[in-house]
Length: 480
Ligand code: ADP
Image (cartoon, rainbow, N blue to C red; front, side):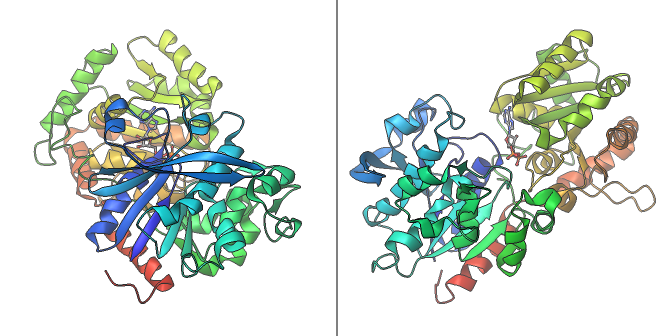
């Protein structure tokens, strides 16, 4: 079974969120199950110089985008036993970030075209092209439109995974026609047309053989208008082909027993190290040093999806409690300002770290008592999975993957691995935070819950098995 994953980011090369974590860890898990998996992604200017050294040049091809023929280097690196291919074009990808340059549609149009043109040059003809999110969404469309009649491409099947339905790659119809050399026929309501524009995401959803998303609950939710981002009709129509497979995390990278990035390692039977992490973090971030104060961590893109409006409503009420709040994230100015401003009003109580910082992220996961993730919607969410691994109890809203992975502590039965609330309501969240901090002050109960959290298994093993099942429905004859 040969799989080529197509994505716009993959850890450790380039990461803005959970998509990169998945592309950095799922391929390895599938290889363990016997599949041959490779990844193809853009070669960004932000890839660290150390990782760049491992990338070798393979060849140069020219890729047509509209009337232009553009340079496209194909490069390759092996990382943790997985082969990564890179699409190199300095103009499109040698920039100081991944997205948000105003020409992202054109950049990823080039990427999608380059992926299909690159296949004959890879020494690897996939049985399945597994495309992730809108940036790869036009690959299945192009395959049908321009390549299907060619021998090499004829048997290739396609899978499209939605990591976040909100970001769709919506562009003008005329631009899309030109970039992809597609006729008017493709721009009807049942194909690429989307409210007088056209959508990469809709292309992936319409033209792929099978669809998946990253949790069961999100797979159900997106069939309704509230979560469906105006694609609920299409998702309902394709519901038989839509799978929900929950993400895992890399249990090697996120391992409190071995993590070199945290202050002190610990295990579920030797939890004292976790409190030492808290004290060290309080010192590093200039918070009041006190092991007994519950620390709430929040590591996130700072966008409305993550439930930050709920926090804005009751921030002062949260901070009226004896708690500390450690934030790590970047995003919308209004949320960055809200947290920055809170550090001024609550010195020693709030720490706002408005940047992307992997090392600090590990330290916060290890040091916090609680991890706040009150998302408006959450396809899967990795923050809560990483928290559970570090014995940091998640406080989540019951939506998408959060609902599927966090079980709210039940005082009657003693079951649970965190805390949750159902409605998108700030005071429901506040009540849940108060309940959680109250429990954190009871050391025996807190340690019992930490152990329960650390005993959960969200490694890739079982989910990788589900992906294998999905691939086999498309290529039943493939052997591992
Ligand atoms: P999303 O993909 O919607 O951003 P996820 O919870 O699925 O959310 O994944 C987010 C990933 O990015 C996690 O690994 C989280 O730790 C990481 N992350 C988010 N913001 C930062 C940041 N500012 N610094 C370091 N890591 C971050």
